[in-house]
Amino acid sequence: MAFNLSELLESRRGENFELHARYLNPQLTKVVTTIGFDRFYERGEGCYLYDDAGRKYLDLLSGFGVFALGRAHPVVKAALRDALDADLANMVQLDCALLTGLLAEQLVKRSPAGIERVVFTNSGAEAVEAAIKFARAATGRKRLLYWSHAYHGLTMGALALNGSREFRGGFGPVMPETCEVAFGDVEALAKELRRGDVAALIVEPIQGKGVYELDEARWREVQAAVHGAGALLICDEVQTGLGRTGRFFAFEHFALTPDIITVSKALSGGYVPVGAMLASDTIVRSVYSSMSRAMVHSTTFKGNQLAMVAGLATLSVFDDEAVVEHAAAMGERWRERLGELAARREYLEQVRGRGQMIGLAFGPPTSRAGRLRWRTLERARPALFSQTLVVPLFQRYRILTQVAADNLNVIKLLPPLIAGETEVDLFVDALDELLAGAEKSSAWVRDFGVTMARGALRPRRGAGRARVGG
Image (cartoon, rainbow, N blue to C red):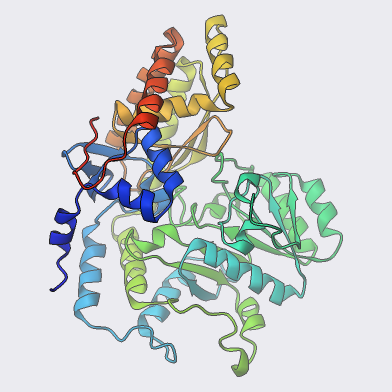
């Protein structure tokens, strides 16, 4: 019997959660069900998702930043169809494919002087793994430094550069030649660099966990210390890169000149996983130093034709539709509307981030009743307040958001870069209503508790076409 995608989807419709609970990650199934996020999404378009009942959801996660162009962008779709129809010779391995060279050329053109070569990978974490190896080879040193709160992926090397301890538990010792430095502490950084054994400092120009950033003056001190010690500066732009912050690379905001850049997520066009490490000719040649070492760093699916097409089509859309400029303009809109909200609503303390990467930090209010409600929540679980907003944003307003990190009262927004004033206003108006309610009573907390209880007690239904109301 020939494979028929439509028939398969229809015949097994509604089994999502049963299949995941049985064959994949059972704890993720419990989390999604408990917080009431268990929907049966059937399609996505632009900034929105649609479930099996035709309900429309504003997606402010965009696949953790993957869907920079929104979902189902017609240019990327058409390019991938053309590539499939062309029956391109793919992953020959002992060849030099044209499309791989063309995408590398486009990335180098968009990079600062000194970035001259590209090493393709399959993901952001793999790009970080490559950066670790190439930094060590180029400097002849072993140690790597990273900031507290950092997140660079969850593969074993990247995990050793992770500033969030909860990700490390149970996996045994990680790569030992790493050291965490307090975020932005130049003196502590300089102390580690003086040992003379540091290959590189890896940084996110704006940190994803919490949306933390440094000012340009501090970044200049950091860069001067790193380069003065003969170490390399690695800018992890997996999430912040390709227009997310209103510049093609986020490090452009701070006039940084990194030695190595990692990218992924948005380069995929939302379709084909792809990552890349960008570096100088000297750094790349330190690894590929002779014909006998031409394959000492490689991966089977690197530079596959569909990923290259998705990347080229994505960059073409960036140019044709002025995506980066639009993200910058919408960043101003976010700042304007959320700043006005922070001035009126006492729980909202700070608006952080740039472009279409926004962090909303919440804190205890000034009113006596409000402080009491805050303390009650925080005693139940640290940083629970932000989760009591994320759940009703989804349940009541059909807006998908996320907490920025465990134990942080910060909500992070990563809308598609094509999101406009309509999407900004939808979110801000919904948050305004929730915060207004939170200032008046504890009803929103009770509603959150009811949602959690219902989710925890809800039976996990399978092939009977389970449906969830909203």
